[in-house]
Length: 230
Image (cartoon, rainbow, N blue to C red; front, side, top):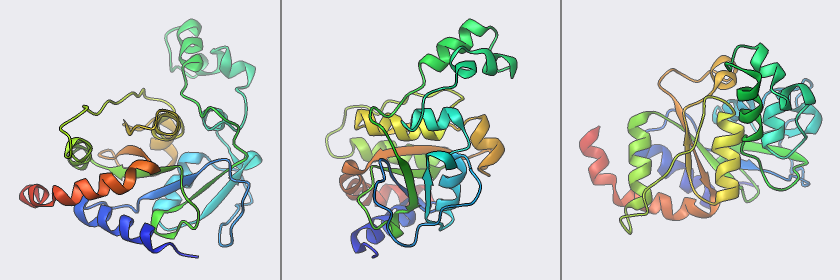
């Protein structure tokens, strides 16, 4: 069943920000399997599922359908394999100067703090369940407006961003907002940019669903300023 409120929120976000992709709703710990969600035959990366949802697809990814092991770890689905946790695999891929640096990076991957059985992803306008996080694929100008919306009502606090060039969607745009209950920006990662078809100018913003109503209302208040920038 479509949720009219979610449809309205999605429409407002797209219209005011000028988003090229649909806002994506993410539901973790998905014991429910509502009708209309497709489970693909082959495993895919979480970041690819987000891209597909931004194009209109509704997907469910249980544990065995998550192709990226670090992504599955960040989402609370599985533990890191020993060769990744030790830093050996990322080091040998040339991502770090030393195994010690790789090991440290793996130990600091943001992670959902409860167990996830599956991920449900869909366009916000078509999500039948209450989401945990809403993801926006945006450009830097749109990200500026998003940041302004978060301080529009009270003038602060300033919007922080924590990110690296890895685990962009799973860790920094999903797990961080889910755990911290604060929005977070991410500039993408190797996996996203190789597999998820985002443009060089694209980045991500993850928003805890509890903030989406007020955030959208604030964007509406900024609409006059937005029009001056178009």
